[in-house]
Image (tube, rainbow, N blue to C red):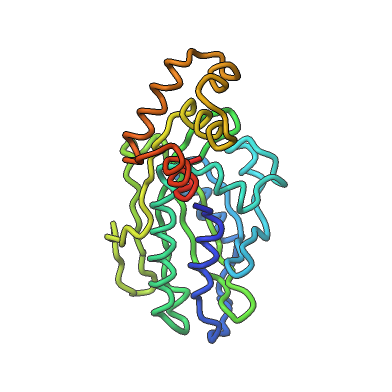
Length: 250
């Protein structure tokens, strides 16, 4: 599954009829409040949803994540979100887009959205990020959002991401929203060794040839082949290869 492509499909449903800018937004004021009330290390950025690009990222991101700022593009950020959290991320984006698509006028600026996920730091550790944003511009060409990402690894230990819509200026709030599971976690069906074997089978190699290139016994290769047939319920090697490639397992 190409997460970036799925996001573009979701964001492509955002209407272009609104022509609004939040004239009250002040990034300086936002940062001053954060410096007083923050619950962990944080960085902030402005993301243009229509264009799928970061228009600015604060320098704290480099210190917290360990990557140079110029590396922090949307495809890269998606690649360092924990694989088990990506389906939740896409389901949340679907729910968020549908939520705001049902609003109009100044109400678009009266909600803060928050949810969480794990991100991989440059040193190989995962941290849990509280992802919060508000919309600051919504028109036919741009949908700009102001994000704050806070490291809450010390506060939240459970692995279940949650989504909430926080109402501002008297709007109702919706906590721990139950979203549709359009995207689901898909655990790899094959081990790395099995992937190597099926790719070799797809090139027309037999078990003896595969055992030579992988430096394992023919008996081990045949055992892996039997296991893959069992996992996929395939009746033949050709059917196994067809299933594996059509499902994107290899």
